[in-house]
Image (cartoon, rainbow, N blue to C red; front, side):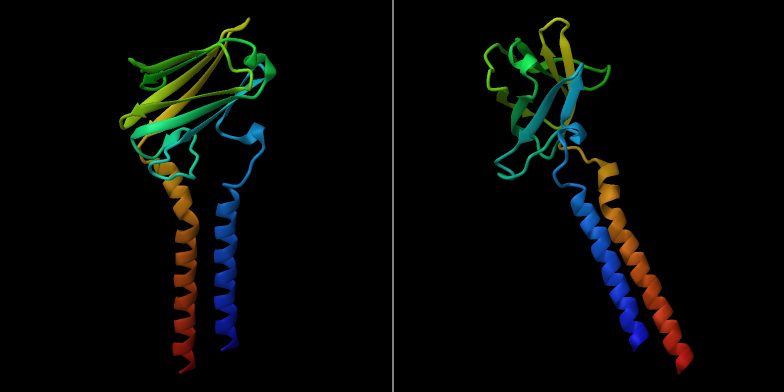
Length: 183
């Protein structure tokens, strides 16, 4: 009976360790480690996107869960960017396969370092292009995926649960074999 308790406690501890590691991966990170930050020549910008009609508290970066109205906020982290005109363009496609412009905005007054707007996007891939018109000009790109499954992220989210399930099955099998041997 003691051996059985030790096995179940080990499985529970393993599950909690794996689950808490998963949660910690989505905690607060430094600005330099944030995947929503782009850094060019020491100038940084940070993109946040929101869909309050779907989840009023959720913040996204480049993986937008549903098509439709999306609010975006671009934070100009460095003072130099706040003092120059900034152009923002959303283009259908990604990489070298860019096509038509979906939306564009030109901002000259953003002394607070915040540029915001909204767009309405259908399912698919887009690129958000940010250009700071300084000398030299600064160019940032954000690939956007709207209502598309990120299979790599889904796989890595499921791995701790799969491992826990397999270990649970292994321990249960060993426990049942041990009981059969004792009878």
